[in-house]
Image (cartoon, rainbow, N blue to C red):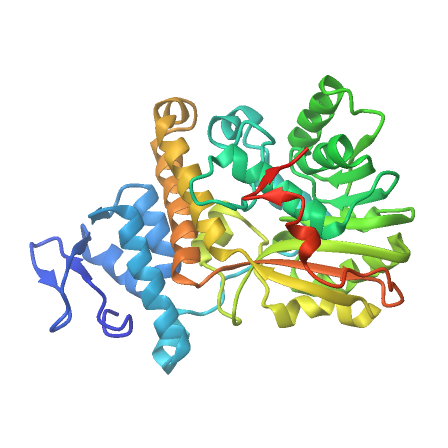
Amino acid sequence: MLSLLRNPPFGFKLWGGEEVATHGSRVRRWICVPDRSKLYKLLANPGLYMGEYYSDGSIQLEGDLWSFLLDIHASLVAGDRDPSLLWKLIRRPAQRRPSTPEAAKDNIHQHYDLGNEFYQLWLDKAAMQYTCAYFARPDMTLEQAQIAKLDHVCRKLRLKPGDTVVEAGCGWGGLARHMARNYGVTVKAFNISHEQIIFARERAAQEGLADRVEYIEDDYRNIQGRFDVFASVGMLEHVGPEQYRHLGAVIDRCLKRDGRGLIHTVGSNAQTPMNDWLQRRIFPGSYVPTLREMMEVFEPHFLSVLDVENLRLHYELTLRAWLDRFERHVDVIRARYGENFVRAFRFYLAGCGTAFAAGSLQLFQVVFAKPNNNDLPWSRRHLYDSYHDGERRD
């Protein structure tokens, strides 16, 4: 296993005290395994059992978790570039739940309906964004960076007063409210998480936006009507590649003749297996596409791709901020959900953050339009002219 991982700077400490590392590797950290059975399972399916055994405390990782997982992801990237037969066997694809309308609701419920109070502990206070922030300056607070992300999306969509917008997968509704409040548009926002929809409606009423933002508890496949703009931030990961053409058909159907849109999603540089533990315990039914796979949304319906941006390192900073806030409230979270949950969520946040740092995950923002739309910007100046370092100029 260690050889397949290209002689990483960590090794195994076994139950009898034996230390195992590859010859010549400079070991900085150790995976402490308590018995032979767990070792065999860990070697046979590390993508599942590393997360399982860390979460229940069966194995201990000596050293900083973030640095440990960064070493693991760097090794995985190296192995995936030149895989052996044994590597392919170990990195076999995870079992993924389907993304049918019925299964999608169960998949979303498992993660997003944990309780709004839980997410309020560690997400930004400004807009409750559970997607990549935009750090126009590296020293931005999480709140500033999330507002900057919302404006970055709105500028890319070139929103103007009177536009009609449909949003697929709206989370707690922050983007829809930001669009309506700051850009003078009306929004219909779809989501299948019951708890998120309740929160979004309450917040829109409190902010006096209920007449301009409508939150609809329904699947994106049921979107009806015609709109100037389509927006989706952080939903494509839950759609599933078998549904990409269907999503494209929904977009094509709901956009007006000169409509435009944006999809913001976690992605990958190449087709690599989804982590088995992440599939089972955190994001059932999820899939991160390559840019080539994303074209299945656009190509069959002649949608024109106008701009692609990768915000990978912005997501690393976002996840560092989330993990830091999570740890600040860990006693409250432990009291409500238990130690196993705390360890699992810590492993998930650190694992995703280090995956972005190592380059095994990407963050794509893709802007597109109907093919006959000639109202196009001649440059990218509209993204930055009225802003300085991500802060709005009134």
